Image (cartoon, rainbow, N blue to C red; front, side, top):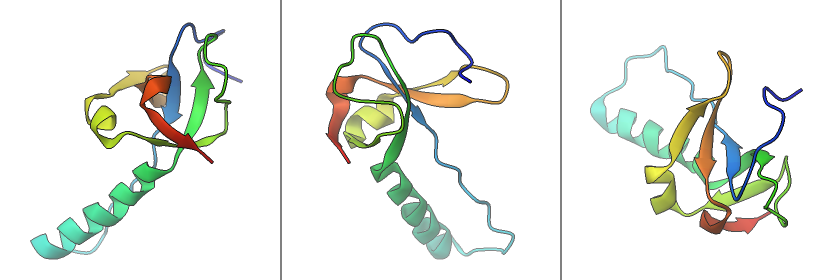
Length: 96
């Protein structure tokens, strides 16, 4: 069950991928490689909810978002346990 009744307008909430912390000490080079590998998760994000004006994207879809738009995207706390990324449907490049 969603933490809210309805998402309004031309908005899309995306689930934030989970990042695992390494229990092993990493050199800076390995740490950067790890970060780059984790960033690949952001190329395929799952849609958590869509606004009532969005017609071609559905909850559960996998989408690719413009990387520039992701850098400026807001993270929204919709409950104590749930955070999502807020983007515009116009920033979504394609849907799988």
